[in-house]
Length: 122
Length: 424
Image (cartoon, rainbow over all chains, first blue to last red; front, top):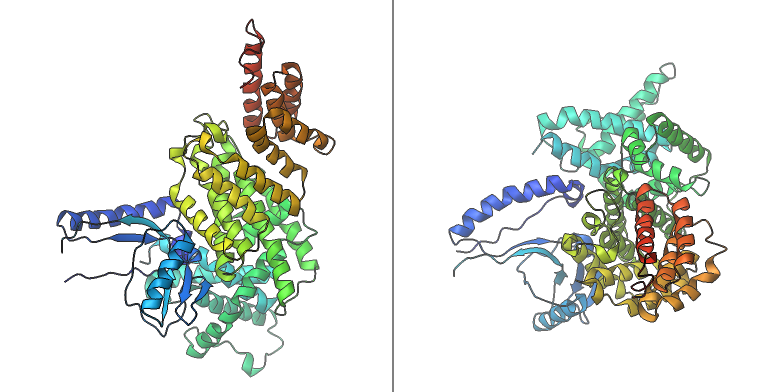
């Protein structure tokens, strides 16, 4: 069984880390990730850019683009995509296509800062 | 989880919101700051024992308020307070609920806190010092170090700024839309000042002032979270990130300034560049351009060139032209002239900046740039005069050293092989 582990933290606090503190955390995480990777159990790992870089597409008819992260609490996170796009407009086009295929709810579009594609065999 | 570093980061990140809310309660900056300090002291005692609170800012506001009210009561022991003003227990659930409802104020609380620091009567250096002390919570010692002045002098500067702010009318009612956007513009300008205070430092000061750049970025991100749909705040944040991304490449081992063309671009921070570009993408969608967005777009064109020759100077020239149109300034024209020299050559660039001479007669960069254009044209004697003037006006030893490098080259060129390679 594949499990997704979703990372939550107070962004203000993480954003207050010095670059040394940040690097120290990343190094500690890398130790855990490397072990999983050697065992062939690590799937993609992403560190997302801050929520200030996020844009949300509400899948209404017609879809509405909103600045900022998805802030509602009445819907739940059900899945995610990682898509290679030249810019935000292209990413929004992809999201609109997906939204047309599956209306309702919303997509939060967030640039990926760091991506480790992982090594898991399925 | 409750180690000192975590608590420190939590207190730092909660500070603008907590001091902003306490200022709204007490309407006095000193009382608000002291209340926050007292709350922090209690947090250092309580959090390691009881674990961190769910909402550190709300905890600090509640405790800070209660401690301060307690203080006021003690000072007026003779006058008994009415029963309903009694301080409730720290663990009081109702109090916590009230505080969470107050959270709806917090955007204006933080904006007000930043806004009182950029009071128009305060000179820029005092605005910055006050914001770093009050909003960012840097110690007087840290700020004094960044400004290369004594701690006593900085203490005095901040005290004076506070006195002036206290004497001014600070509106505490919720601002209207126009007022809010005016406040936001003033605050954005101040954040950019803080950044430039760090960015323009060089030599030994560069390392001690670098935290100012990081603090400005933190404040810009904070503003952007509060005002998510403001393209100029996106532009400001992008601009700071794109400029700061070059930090590691801007100085050589001796602390001398390395020009953009000569920087090792592999040292540029790609994560910051990615974030800056993402923010520009977001801003562009609003189709409401502004000075920060344009400057960010210029910085993005530099960031996007893997080699200096790949820089899109034509586009940079156009963007500076747009910036001149909405924010005319001789300094903008001077920057544009550098792009013009790359696109149309040094003669056209020189013609562009000559009319600026009366207004920039005391500006280091004017003479540095003018000297460089003259040198490119092979007018070495005139170039030397301009460079000498630049050295006299240099703001730092790194700037002077950089110009001296040009002069040395002129000296070499004036030897037997005069002006052979000066035109390039």
